[in-house]
Image 1 (cartoon, rainbow, N blue to C red):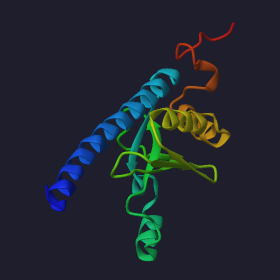
Image 2 (cartoon, rainbow, N blue to C red):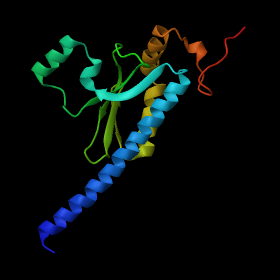
Image 3 (tube, rainbow, N blue to C red):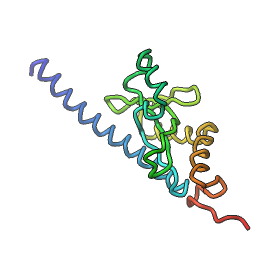
Image 4 (spheres, helix red, strand yellow):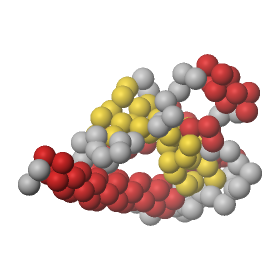
Length: 162
């Protein structure tokens, strides 16, 4: 086989592996979103959104003029479920890879490179347990009229204490 046929076959094989990795990453984010939705008593959704979705218009224009942001960067963001008018709240930077892995989650001044689903899940758990993320999620719940005392990691909602 010629070198080009080998390269072609190798590229096709790697494209299939990358597609499987991206599906695996999507599943991790579905679990993240489902768990946060459950724990917040159906109040908060988390998605990967274009980074500009979490910025105000003036800052977006300034970024475009400065051209300092990577075009591949996205935002892991949260908002109140069903709120089309509510803007997304940035939680972390998400830098995907065309190959699926490695991918990067950056928050609290650290860049975390993830080589597999287990590492990605661990980093996203760390992101959720970070005080800055907790503050942002609490603000979303408070705006929705749900306080922190009304949520529980076990079942999503505690009964009010008498």
